[in-house]
Length: 631
Image (tube, rainbow, N blue to C red; front, side, top):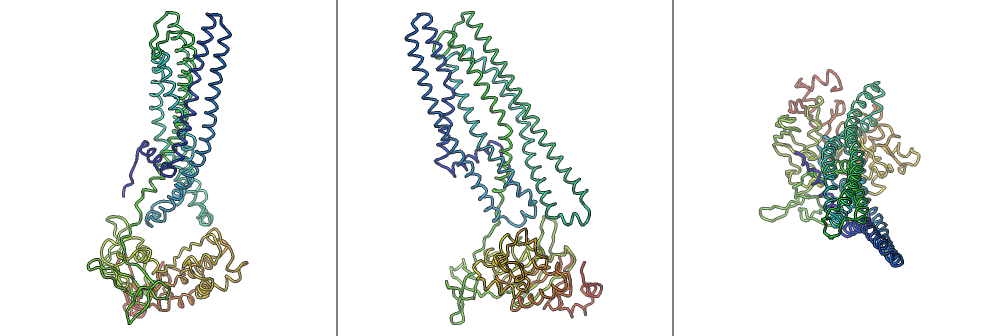
């Protein structure tokens, strides 16, 4: 599915709506505080004009006593305004600290929640480092935009508006001079800032690629060193890093050029306004203003300060271009993740606790050890309960990961409860794909898959996966104790259940010899354990879940022969009474299967028992007599 692309304005609008959703009261209150602070910062020019007018009048009349009282009153009023501004500024800073960090926290939670709902193909198509970049770089650019750029831009906009109104109040002629300079500043901001924006977007994507490559190299560092691939890895990293450098250089070159240009235009504009004001005073020109006041020093001097403030705030906007554009780029990537289509699940058949009454299964709340599929029938509104047995059947299944690139062709097979079915074939034959389809990590293109006679598309995915256990070649252990890693297969399992599962898998012996036994803390995917020990814990985790169907995807391929014998005993005990699908490169591990299915290029070319396949003298016979390894 093509990702939705949003323009910068749409992204900012969506972000503001999200922040308002998170903080419906705090956000408007923070905006009010910004407005008060900005307006108060704009009004000193009015007080300066009044003070100069009082001084000018007193100079003409010679009445300095009355001028002193007026000046004190004006200064006192200004001090009160600044006091209000100080309180508003302090309140705004406290509120924005809460809003900024709270927004980031909630967005991280939303991203993580969304990740739990994404299909497996999303993680197959995107590097893990690039996904992690959403939580680090993209969130950090968003933090800068919310905490610094947004408040500064809003304050600048309010100050510019307020100062512009005061300018019109004093003199329309001088205001037109200022607007001519501001028009040039805005034109340059649009031209230079627009070019900078496109490069900042590309910079964020390049940064994600750099982090993805670095994460990949760190996780595969042993392989890099074993094959002396350090120089090639360095060259690849340099190439990706150079790409990031080029995009960042271009983005910052334009952004850093804009500030000095605008500052100098502001300085030139100050001089131009001073000259224009002086010429108007000398020429005795008639003032055109909302106030109706005549040209005087009390107008020109404050107007110069307002010009500096006006141009300064326009320049301040340019200084935020970097943060705003980077923030928009990061926010766009965050929203792209949140907008990824979630894993669809239209299943309505669920797995429930059951008990047998008069030969039929009925649902019950208490745990009985018996499970049944609760199958509501939409046609007549009835509900039937099908006992969970572990009968799996595939009918004429076709599948393709990408359009026009089929992986499975017309695959039909069945596994009755308690049967052991083995898949053999060269890499890419489609063995693992079949197990991915059983779990509905991917959905088939054509055909049907039935579990206990029910089409698996009708079964809720979470319930389907609870009824399937899987042990992969690549083990994944999480930070926590050994006991917690085993319990991951069934969160309500007792310590006794976990220990029993470990004994069944043959893991209890080495676990009890660990420094803290089952309480030993594992980290870094169990880096302090051997590959075989990690696999034994993975098998124990599957055993404690106690599913009726077990998928063993090359579960012993990375285990030494001695450990394999231990694992195999545990596996044999684990497979008792279960339907088991075995994928193995070592043909010695599949000899005792009830049926062996030979796959080639996504098609079933042979099936039968070990003895039957040897008698056929086909592909399996060639593999078995030629070598005990398929590779």
